[in-house]
Amino acid sequence: MKNKVVFLDRDGVINKDYVDYVWTPEKFEILPGVVEAFQILKEAGYLLIVITNQSGIAKGIYTHKDVFVTHDYLQSLCGNLITEFYYSPYHESKTASLSRKPNSLMFEKAIAKYNVDISCSFMIGDKDRDTKPARKVGLKSIAVDDKERVNRHADIFAENLLDAAKKIVSL
Image (cartoon, rainbow, N blue to C red; front, side, top):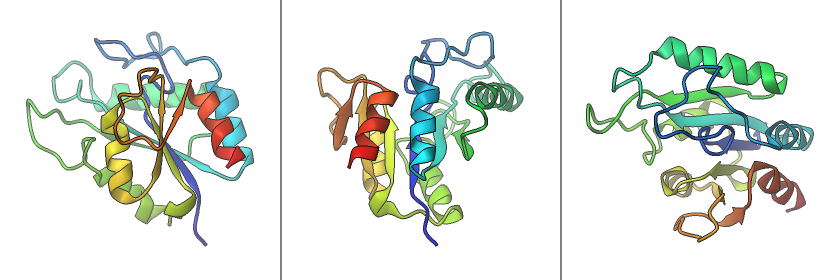
């Protein structure tokens, strides 16, 4: 049986994005409507998978453990609605990696593991590097918080994650 999935970028979609990174629960500020969006998508039968670059690890700013603690904190805020987290600890200034978005390896791993039905699955991101790999693997993509419509790879635009969730379930 194939699964329908909503892939989610983290920083800027689920939580407030800071220039100097988010790696502690104290700095993790969930955006308005996120938990409600997760609930809407789960009730509609979607698995929720976070796909995020965490280059602060490669830069020595924080550790893998910090990412796990922050993701556990997010799960506690949303009632464990997220199926899985995939993250890339790399940064192009330190090392090349196919897992780092805009490459598609994290997507490909999740698609294989969860037997994803691409035709009814989505990627929600706030940057072009989120939606570009989604297009590469055949996912429909939604850009949030992109009032100028600069995201060249997005199929749909939404104000925020809650707006995106409502658009998905209305399709």
